[in-house]
Length: 217
Image (spheres, rainbow, N blue to C red):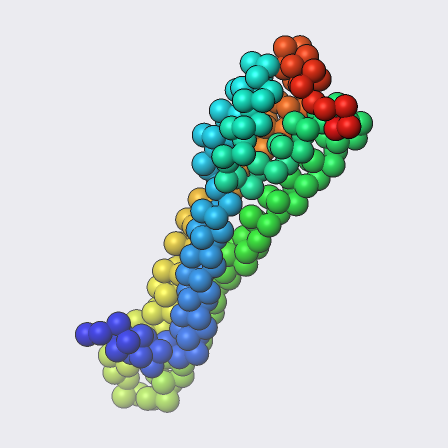
């Protein structure tokens, strides 16, 4: 049976509730693919070049740090470069922290939507099951004294389909959300470390940076 035929059968059995859950699963897939592309484009988790630049900076090689930083594709590279140009500028740390927070907030867009789907999908599936059970018992009542157990059994398993579909949507959504949140949490820690490394340097790096920065910087 083709996937389209399976979806059509689920829609016929589960009704509009299953249709809503299928739409939610499509939204989850679209958001997941977008976030994977966004993370890859921003260089999330790929900080080898940036870490090398910070190592040069801590060692006092200001020129080498700036040269190595220019090779980084990380979204944090412009912020670190700004910090390296004038690390002792008053108030620069607060400004860069705010810009780093804004950049991380962009990475977290869509998380609230995924969280809503993960929480709402099981409840929506349960709601569909309750409606199906009500319909099954109404059919049983209509049958009167000539009760056929197959009527109740058939109504129950059809009603449980919505709960199964709701869980099938919620579980992978929760896993994807947890993975994305763990990546952004790691990014937050690394961003803070990178900025603090430049803005609160050791005495060696501070001496090298001060002597290498032009007077107008």
